[in-house]
Amino acid sequence: DEEARLRARRLESLGTLAGGISHDLNNVLTPILMAVQLLGQGEQDPARRELLTTMETAARRGADMISKVLAFARGVDGRRERIAVDSLLDELRIVARDLLPSDVELTVEVEPIPPSSAPIGDSTQLLQVLTNLVTNARDAMPGGGALRVRASTVDGAPGEGAGSPPLGASVVIAVEDTGTGMTAEVAEKVFEPFFTTKPLGSGTGLGLATSLSIMRSHGGLIRVDSAPGRGTRVELLLPVPEAGAVEDPERTDAEQP
Ligand code: ADP
Image: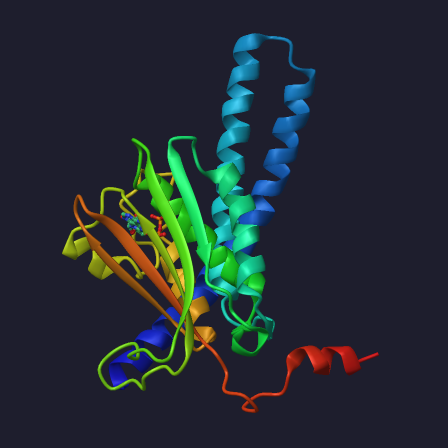
């Protein structure tokens, strides 16, 4: 509908703007980082060394934020390959090992998904979505807790909102945490670019906005179900292409020289 189109257009121009600014900012930060590192190498005075370390940390954090904004702005034109969901979640397990503190217990369960039911898309982008969800779950469990990632298949699912067509057979990846949960007011805003409740410097508010644009570009969905004190369940739905509906991208790749 009209409102959704306007919102998509606004998001797109915001992406273009953010991408342009990020690119320029990167050019500003790179020489600062290099100079600070060089100064740090020759510095003997401990107090000055500490100041230089502070500068380097801040510049690095800035560079990290820029790369997140760029990922959001780059958005949508990803690869189209068959996604092996079990390998994707194996990769997530490796990423999560570095992200999660020892008081967060991770379980990953994957229902066997035959290659004919594999969704199609960009596994790097999907890993990025899952990494965003794991990061958010971690941040919502400062005192530790449980994080469950489960993949299964469903025959169909309702569409994104009133009026949008339902999804056919899909793979569902659910990420559940036992963290703080969200109020309805927060849950309503989480997909807005730059919306964050995290302290300045630790959140960009782009994780879920980027995740939403990636899921949409896959013809899929992302849903959040959360309540304060109960924890949060985020569901990713990826449609499985009907047999014969698309060419096999693997075969097409293999035929190319
Ligand atoms: P960021 O993580 O940089 O804040 P996101 O777009 O990923 O950006 O998330 C936006 C906000 O949504 C977070 O600041 C937080 O308030 C809320 N949120 C997201 N995931 C969770 C979660 N699993 N539990 C509680 N709150 C969450």
